[in-house]
Image (cartoon, rainbow over all chains, first blue to last red; front, side):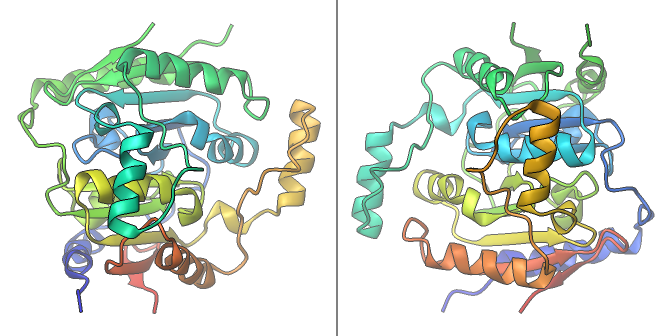
Amino acid sequence: MATNVVAQEFEAANKSYAESFTKGSLPLPPARKVAVVACMDARLDPARVLGLEEGDAHVIRNAGGRTVEAIRSLAISQQLLGTREIVIIHHTDCGMLTFTDAAIRTKIQEDLGQKADDIAFLPFTDLRESVLDDVEVVKRSPLVLDVPITGYIYEVETGKIVKVE
Amino acid sequence: MATNVVAQEFEAANKSYAESFTKGSLPLPPARKVAVVACMDARLDPARVLGLEEGDAHVIRNAGGRTVEAIRSLAISQQLLGTREIVIIHHTDCGMLTFTDAAIRTKIQEDLGQKADDIAFLPFTDLRESVLDDVEVVKRSPLVLDVPITGYIYEVETGKIVKVE
């Protein structure tokens, strides 16, 4: 049976973090009143890239950083925890640029014997457009307050964020 | 008109990150072949808490760290980018313990004049149960491979992760 190898490594790494931990009395609402929506990509660490400390910001992440899947979280972030700005980050060399719904459905059928025809996997073909689209999805959502929204492309090659306008 | 104040601070902070950036040639697939699902909470920084470096792991985050909203991302993570272990992290003092669907729907009606009756905001009343439930959701998902899954509670008071079994 497969074992939880990485989880055990996480537990060991967490011992160091907890030993020098000094942030045990931070309040629940984010100090900087911002929610970040970003891709789950392993190379993108929103805290390091944006200079976030513990307690600063909500960070919502999924495959692609797609905002259509972040509306529940954004509504909770604003309505219950007072955030009043939104930052959206997609990135170069994104996995979402490499497949289609049809392709992943075929792979799931082959690997798992399952139909996934009803799931939108939300890939995209144009990175800049995907950011603009996702800004628009948030702007138009009736469940999200009218707050400043900024969209960026993170360059995995350079470490830079580039604003999309 | 409100301005994008925090976004401008992020751009300034990013300059420092990019100046000392040395990780421009990392591959797309996560090196440690793991996907982490965690809450968006501002006090929880999965990279610092678990010892993650850029390139190590997919990190999926939403309000509560609810896996029912992470299935699309997990399927993409496994099918296209080869992750083969899952770690789920909820945490103490979570905002999801403080409200009900009825309460947030009322607030959205008052603040935004919108009905949100069709949205499940996925709050929970028992932290340990929420982790066990979310492990089970992933285990039973027909779109997720049979891989090791570990659930933790992160203690915002101590910086420790505690395994839920």
